[in-house]
Each structure stands twice: as C-alpha cells, then as structure tokens.
Image (cartoon, rainbow, N blue to C red):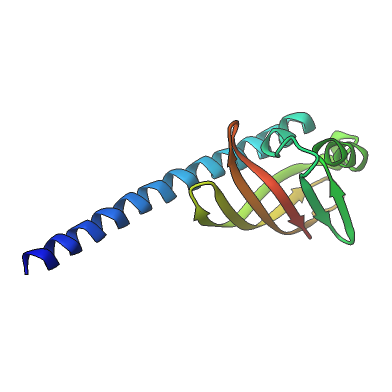
Length: 143
C-alpha cells in the first residue's frame, strides 16, 4: 500500500511540474506574440519580425505562396505593408497553445487588422521552437 501511495504521489508531483512548465511556456509564447502586436501597431515591421526564427529555414505560408527564410519574409511584409495605413492595428485572439515538448509548441489563433477602409482577418497556425534566443516562430501558416 505504501508503494502505491508513493507511486501516486510521484506521478502527481510530475504532473504538477509538467503543468508549471507548460504554464511558463505558454506565458513566454504569449509574450512574444504581445511584443509582435505592439511592434506592428507602432509601425515597426523589423520589431514584429523579432518573433520569428532568424534562419533561411523559416517557413511562412499565406494563400498559395510559400516564403522561405527570415529575410524573404521580412521583404514580403515590407512590400505588402509599406504604409501605416496598410498596416492598420493588429490584434490576435482565440489563441490556443499546445505544448508538444520542452522546446516545441503549436499555436492556433485568429488575427485581425483594423484599418480605415477595411478589416481583414483570418486564422493562423504557428510552430514555435525554444531556441538559444528564446521562443521563436519557425513556421507560420496564415490564411
């Protein structure tokens, strides 16, 4: 009986540690996304891009276009959002974070741009990896 109680206590302890780690991971990822939205809303595309992995292996998918690499993704954003009016005000909502491991997570959510003449919006799926510089988006699929 003691073994069973000790085993159960150990499993509960591990579950508690796992929940705490997941909570810290979710908070760190939300912080990256909050910083991205703040940078975007200040007209700072380079600041927004700090949430992405600076690598030629970064993958950004939107519509029927696949963009590979951090620089190519930055260039795409700068071309498509070359004025403050086009950038509008960005908000993220309906965020669901699934922690896969100590260094990987998937984020599902919604994005919305409020602009003077329209309000484009859609969904996104992000793959976050914990790198030496912190949590970064390594794959972004936005519709």
